[in-house]
Length: 468
Ligand code: FAD
Ligand code: NAD
Image (tube, rainbow, N blue to C red; front, side):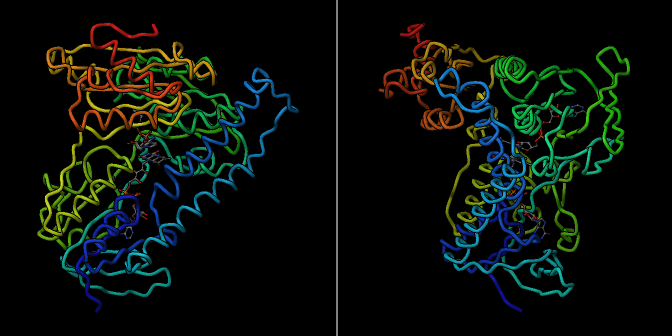
């Protein structure tokens, strides 16, 4: 039986990054993945393919709606969905192949098959041909990720009633897509098809979209999606069931007054969150505990209740984000090497890749109110930005929340062009505990979208923004 210092189960951004860092730190490392391609949800059916389709659909939308104004005359563009999906597959393949390269480069032994604990230190790998190989490992990192959740009364038939995985592989543009859940997946994939011409109806249980984010972002994104893509929103609606025929779906829900409503469409995308995935992992054989939501229980150092077994990423508590999983992978590897790493969970940014993009880090205004914290607000609208006017991306704003007394930045909430990239400045600032004044005194290149961050900080420090 081959012996390893560390075995990582699952090759998503948590697992493959943990494996690389372990190998960099001199550990003999194995990585087990049940699918033929590495990269997990993120690379295969998550972050990367969804962003590929978001980019393609945004090009189409701009060609239809904005080229003329820019002085570009073209024939009326048509959607070639087959090619769009094909390009997306190419992007996914290139990215997954990149992980194979990284595994080889770092001399990580990759096993393809379903991993499960025989006991604390022995792991079985069941291959697709039914054969079983066993390895021994001093330490194990569980990084088995998550799968889409559904609701009682809904059967995902993967044809008409679909999850994000099927939505990335449709063969036609839906006429009317009903989204259950106005969270990140619903709004991103709804944007893809909305831009290609689908009517989109969002059925959301709460009273706003992206409910975990700052309320001002929800409000602005709702306004823009309605204005630009004609999204319809049904809030405070509790979905009770979905029925599908060969060509149609009927979603039933109870509205805010508890009255039954019916929404008909040709596709229903169920995007009500994801659940941790530990099926067939043999956790009971190793004695690893899960909590009441099926997540592997970990302490503050990502250790499970069993000595030598760690868990990271979507399968443990916290935000289900690729970069959170990556941070945790590095954290565990460095801890195993005797280092003292640290993760500041409050400074893990969140991004929604709609257009305009939504990005945030730190506390929301609602959270600061709840904590009774005294804070100042600085905002700057993109319509006052020269760079945004040049690109005709004037929707949205940057909102900075700073401590009323010390001026320390406590939260940054942005909606606008390229805010997914802009939020990095806020993360750096907050990691170094910068004040709004610090940022407002730093030179930001002109003309850039990032000037809006500086202006929002100027606004927070004595209402001295220069361009509003
Ligand atoms: P995963 O990526 O889920 O990987 C787990 C891996 O473990 C899988 O490959 C699985 O096959 C394997 N596995 C499971 N059990 C076993 C076993 N017993 N043996 C062997 N292998 C096993 N996050 C972002 O930060 N940004 C985004 O833009 C973004 N977009 C997304 C879009 C969509 C449509 C979806 C669905 C998710 C998106 N996410 C995004 C979330 C992101 O994909 C996850 O947070 C991230 O993939 C979690 O990484 P992970 O390593 O914990 O698990
Ligand atoms: P989510 O938690 O973002 O949104 C789910 C939405 O469904 C919420 O608004 C919730 O209120 C609503 N909902 C729940 N039950 C409902 C019901 N019965 N009826 C109507 N609405 C209901 O989950 P998601 O959009 O499925 O995404 C799953 C995970 O994937 C998220 O945790 C997210 O972090 C991750 N993800 C991230 C990105 C990104 O970072 N850009 C993109 C896609 C997915």
